[in-house]
Image (cartoon, rainbow, N blue to C red):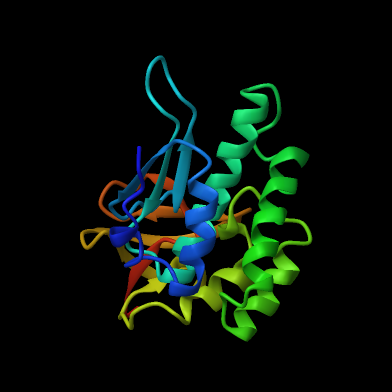
Length: 203
């Protein structure tokens, strides 16, 4: 599939486009720009039967978050092309590919200076999801379109919040990158990611 860069340029920093064109011209894959997903920013799927490998990235991400996620998933593609399913998804092979790609972006001044500094720290040992690095997420959030929504990790424990404009929860204890939250209407507990966007209800 030929990547439509006229569409892609609406989602990534302009300075990154020549780099992405060079990367993508040498590999064949489908790129899907997805609707907002609360559980992930993007994903990678290896080829099945006659299908090409596929990368998807959420459309609601700001240009820097979109680029980082796209690069993260492209690193998965490179590992898959070399090793298929013979290595761990976020093992040393992926970390090496991701670090190599990100180093190109970091040395070409694609990112604002302070975000670049946070990314350089993050890349010393990148996690399976950038959402695990709250410092990086908070820095990226500064580049979002202004909104009355907060991320779950920004509100205090025992606060009441609305998720997806309808479901009401009480925030509980943290478990790694997620929080145990009780839905008020059902009394059931759910693990909700710390980067989920929520509307705080005045307690």
